[in-house]
Image (cartoon, rainbow, N blue to C red; front, side, top):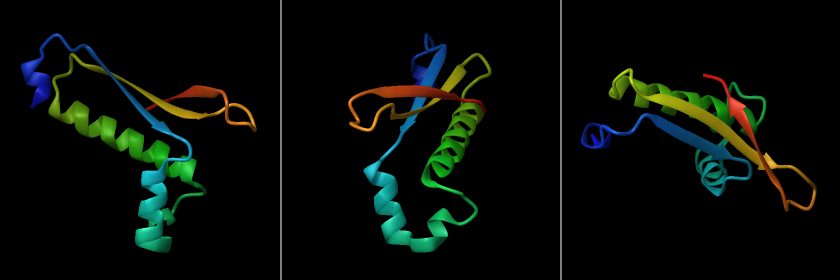
Amino acid sequence: MFLNRFDSIKQIVLINHEDCRHYEALQNFIGKLFMQRFANMAERQRVDLKKVAKVLLDLASSRIETKLYYAKFADASRSKVVFEEVWA
């Protein structure tokens, strides 16, 4: 695994973002099941972000810290982005 090859890595930052075309494509392909148990797409993405972080931490040693963020548009014109920290 890449973390074993780069032992200087101390922190991993994972970012998921609003209006992700990949998530839109998955929803179109899978249908209603994709959003089952989720109030909205942002909730789905935050939950998935936590799952990815858990997998990384399970694969890595405890010495690596993860930070999770959800990027979303800060204004109606979509010209500014804010990063909200997601707590695992």
